[in-house]
Length: 275
Ligand SMILES: [Ca+2]
Ligand SMILES: [Ca+2]
Image (cartoon, rainbow, N blue to C red; front, side):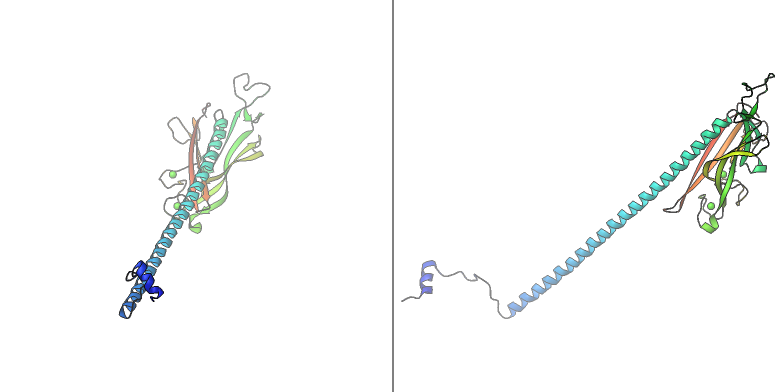
């Protein structure tokens, strides 16, 4: 009687050679394990390399992103400061233009006051009229005859490039000194005493009286006096002036990168009453 295996073989045929789990023997088994280890090591090596490449790319992306964010912030801060200073310069110029158009300069800006101060009067009403019977204008301020206005720069601190290690005026040295302060408008009575004073603008920069280059703020060889009166040929004068020039320098320090922003605004006013 045939056993069960013989009967199955007879029914379905012999199983194919090599079918099922191979059973390598002797040297063949050792070679297969070595190949496996070698392939495994190669795979691990390439995996570490891939991780390093990914980390490097991520670091590059993060660094680039941070640089972009910081640069954008600095650009924004500088732009904000510049806009602020320009609007301040524009506002002050408008105030001075309005006051000076019809005025009589009584104390002209000159070397005596470092071109940083001047006084003037405007026509005022006296008994309902701006002039007397002979056509002489009543001059004064705030409807008070013989009063006057005074614009002046008042220093509040000194900027010292050498001690601050900052090139405030961007001329590639750290050897300059500047006055930083405010422009004030005072109303003075007939005895020249201040009745009221208001601060019109801060962050004004001059080198009047200090510094290693008298009045030349940006070191371009041209002096930068704050206030000047000019004659018809554009020369600085203290009498017979026809125009008034305000050469305003405003400065601000952007704290995020210690960058200085300087804004220069020049305004000229034609005076209706030649001085
Ligand atoms: Ca400098
Ligand atoms: Ca200059």
